[in-house]
Image 1 (tube, protein in one colour):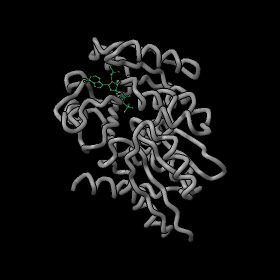
Image 2 (cartoon, helix red, strand yellow; image 1 turned 180 degrees about the vertical axis):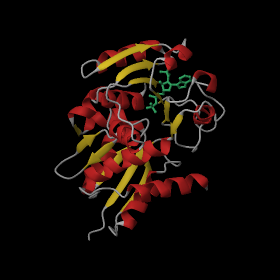
Image 3 (spheres, rainbow, N blue to C red; image 1 turned 90 degrees about the horizontal axis):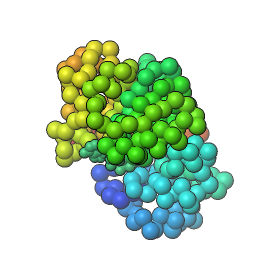
Image 4 (cartoon, rainbow, N blue to C red; image 1 turned 30 degrees about the vertical axis):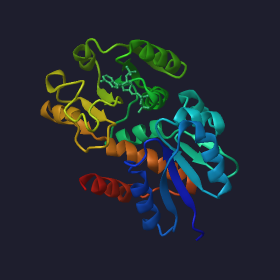
Length: 274
Ligand code: ATR
């Protein structure tokens, strides 16, 4: 089989776990492909993408802070356009852009036997990741409360999302009351990320048994939020699930093959332990 190059562009990029994850998948399937991380400045995104195409890359992932800029220089699919960001580029038949963050979140929930249809979901954050998750879950029939530190961003996101489903936007003034209203709590803010590992927006006293708590922060396996959730008897889903499932969807777009999810997850968890 022909060796094909893949990669991720972002800035910073040195801590990305995507190379470990995708190289494990390629190795496992004997595909002989290689995936590498590239630091690219915002002003160089268009050159980097067309350069990768010229060099014969199979595809790219795009991460912070380049996803919105990438949307402008690729042929984006309707969902990526709605979200306003691209995290996956496929070079087969042109330069086509997708966003797999939302589907990654959906599959992470499904893997834990959770369907969002008719569920109330509190989504913390209104940044790039939140936009992708909000559109996907609203498409799938969830009722969303989007709460953000900067309330106008949440209100704007909810307004955009109402073109596909049910959403309201608000501030983070009374998270205790909001948490009581929902079945699923998703943290898509950067709160709790390394090095601020002691931070959480929601504590155990605000949660309960029966609540599902999904934290998309993945640069440590158990965030403070997930520890607090466990204390309260809530079910927890960690951010490795999100990373792996969005990556699996990119893998499927590039190769047309189902990704070896367990292999990818083991590779990421192993790297995180190191
Ligand atoms: P990403 O693309 O990874 O989602 P982002 O677009 O920078 O990153 O969004 C980060 C999110 O985390 C935002 O919702 C941000 O809130 P603001 O819109 O108010 O900036 C949220 N966030 C970051 N630090 C936070 C903090 N200390 N408390 C509450 N929310 C925070």
